[in-house]
Amino acid sequence: MNRVEKVCSEIMNYLVEQGFTNQVDINQVRKVIIRLRGPDKRTINNWLKALETLGYLKPESAVIYSMNLASCPELFVKALRGEKQKKLM
Image 1: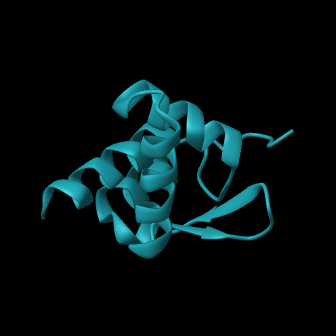
Image 2: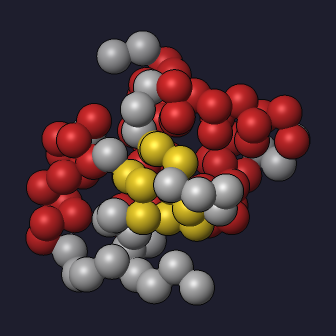
């Protein structure tokens, strides 16, 4: 696993720990990226692009992403043990 995939897994892990298992709001993803990688707009856009390109997130609409937990098997198990999906709005 290269550095980019490790960071993407870290971002996805943080989202699952926050209670998101199926869909997530783009603002929540941005907050996680800011916490883990920094607040620069270019950084946020680069990590959003990496998450989409590598298949961790799939855009459902302009503000909603569908999470692909199959890309991180350990997260899939963690999500199954956790509670139901948090409300998006």
